[in-house]
Length: 288
Image (cartoon, rainbow, N blue to C red; front, side):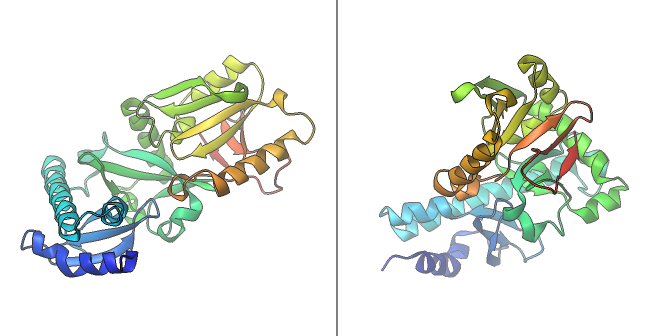
């Protein structure tokens, strides 16, 4: 009988037979997006790469022979190994800030999905969202930056954040287009992991200038954020908006794309994104 547990067992027992001989360790873990992934390496702490296994389980459930599925997963693992080695050869000693300073980027995730990693990874929390910092490796790989590494670099997380925001905005410029119900949609040029564009320098100031009035920010998913003029919501309208956000997360947004259950606003004077007034007595904020 096909099941996820049987699928994992097959991978655990057979994947390494398709891998280069030096790769001997295999383990199931949660990746940075909160999805179950497989880690393959020379040892658990030596040269490991992580691969999302959800697409391969989907193939398995659709009727693809398990040996074909495992072979495809092994091929993807090997490609990522090659990309990782090319990354290390290109940037040399990753411990040296000078080798990677122009490549450091950030992405926005929910605190809930990343809670188990926040004690290790360098991060900044903004309400129920968190910025994570990384250096790209290959087409989809990421080497996430730890608190220990930032300390070894002799820099603050605030400095790391400013570098990452600058590089990310340069590599993935923000996009702003009209949405439904008078909203504006904020994302990036990839239309993927674009919600972080709300933290690009001057983006919120440009939106404020365009709208000519205060506005609410709804991090709809990791890919995009909505902006609504506050004038469209009278009396307790913001509470209804917050309720709609929670319902959308529960019923519409896939769990791996969920970013926030909260509504935020932008303070032009302090240049901070804060939790919308009237929704909580505990306001979280972050320097932009």
